[in-house]
Length: 373
Image 1 (cartoon, one colour):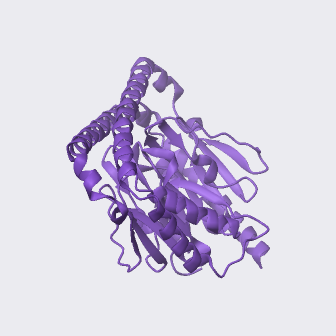
Image 2 (tube, helix red, strand yellow):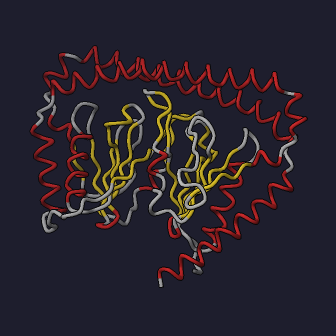
Image 3 (tube, one colour):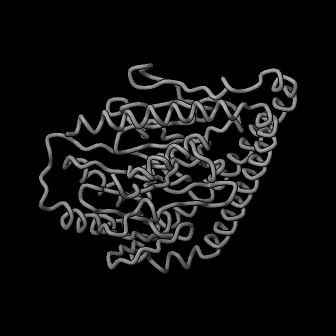
């Protein structure tokens, strides 16, 4: 491989109305994985830098790599997936604890705590305990604000559900299914759904890397519609149609409704993608394929509830801002905790471990290449 590989940035977990919500189980399956390395260690020991550096080394060698960002600090990584050779490095610490499921055969633990000065850390025991406890309290408060915002969000949904003609979703979904899947028969083997987050609520505000998720060279549909108009229902119908035809799907979920509200869909086998465009993540993709579910809203009903909708929007934004500010405080406290670890790390030994790990991954790449020949 001579040219550089492609990079995709996503979030495997998120700060949501249900607390921290993890889709880690979808990062790389045990059956398909060549190797999964669970990187352990405290804050500031270099887990993110370790994984990012290996990811960039593999990109430079021409391999496509997914960088899994941390919703609690979007400049930091929770994992790296080298897609071409089915190898992943994952941050295995709280709140997304990851342990080997098939130790040795598939996955393993790489503990950067092997390279710290225990005596130095023990001297800061009380400060570490207090900082860790404060981070937990701040996130608990942030999740309460998000849960409150979800109540307001639900009222907005209720109003729009009353105003929308639900047949609109069925009509638009059927048009897409006929146009994009009409020539593909239902398969005797269903496709897989890989679930992730395309955006996150972070200390730096609302963050997304959708330009790396939605390939502009694909056939892209932009789906517009206020909460309650059925954007997630339409996308769920698309997912069902694809899976029934044996196609694999990547589905990206909303932090406000991490279990049910799909926001973006990618079907790579067809070069097909769908992205939701709204106030909180506006699509910049230039396409003629736009589905506007707001066109099915009854303006008279919206007018009737105009005061309620305005109040709800104001309250929702206020609670969202409060959530972000609280997560930012948690990040600052976490940064303080890192200052107790960094001086007590033997980073020269971490570097030696990194070099050995990179060589192992390059060996996996050579073995994988031979298997594919």
